[in-house]
Image (cartoon, rainbow, N blue to C red; front, side, top):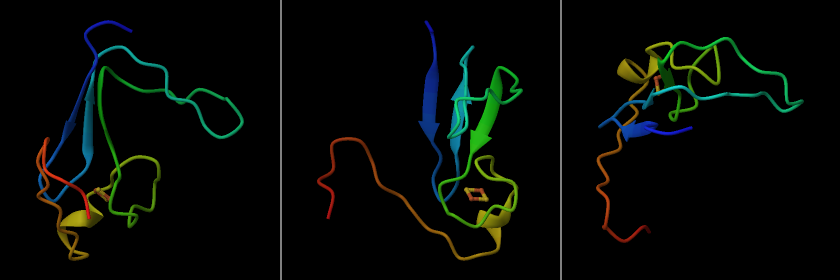
Length: 70
Ligand code: FES
């Protein structure tokens, strides 16, 4: 899995770019494209993927790399 990038989007999902295998709790692979977004707000109706719900459910997250976590 070379050249895989996961970007933490401000107030939004994880943007995964690259060729990866995403599997469910049983190890069954999902069909994914080379670019897809994973929910991190918990509000998606199609988890683990983002369905855009973060835009209306009040989810905010603006952390940056190197910042201490609380
Ligand atoms: S991050 Fe988009 S629906 Fe959760």
